Image 1 (spheres, helix red, strand yellow):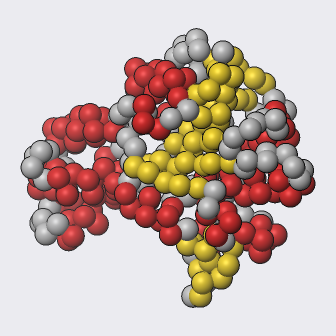
Image 2 (cartoon, one colour):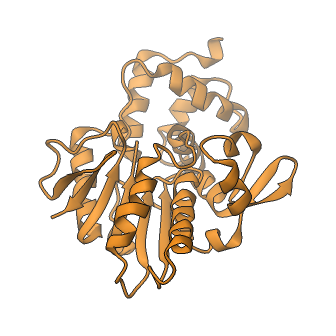
Length: 276
């Protein structure tokens, strides 16, 4: 359709805008993604073509539109207990290492999307405490951050449809950690929600107000950034971690050539990075 056509120059301008706003680097072959993500915004903002939408997005005065565009472009699919091994490592290695802690264990889920990762971490804490009474006496504080306010609203509400619930969540965990809320929806139970809090954060900005953490999850996010931005983010993570703190990256992501502030710890299965 003509109203969804973008000239190469318009696409290039949009790529520059997106990288400046949130660090995401779009390749030459991602025009289809831009079209599919932005097309629904045309009716919402009463514009007749994708070309016009992109043109208006480039204007600094269009704050609401710019926020909606970044929102649309940064929303990613996610699932419960993604890749399994990080959550196994929490229970078999990382939680036991912090058993003498006299304060809550602090964990950050960066780019928390619609909440599956931080709530999976919270469920892991609850499972560990049930198996090891008296360990982690002060519990845990899990903070989820995201650039998308739409996703943060979903995180805070913690209600999911049957399709989302089917992705990575066992029947046992659904029964234990969710309550039915009707129409095929289910909500995370309050004891799990109380372990978590959520706030808006652009990973390109400062993390100084976040405080210090023992464990940071930033998985399947760095793949969207340039090497320079990746190095900057990892350096900021190092600053945000307590001594000997841990960083989880995605299974396909590597810190090679980006930082010398971490030791790679090979586990079975998986890899984690420990601050030196």
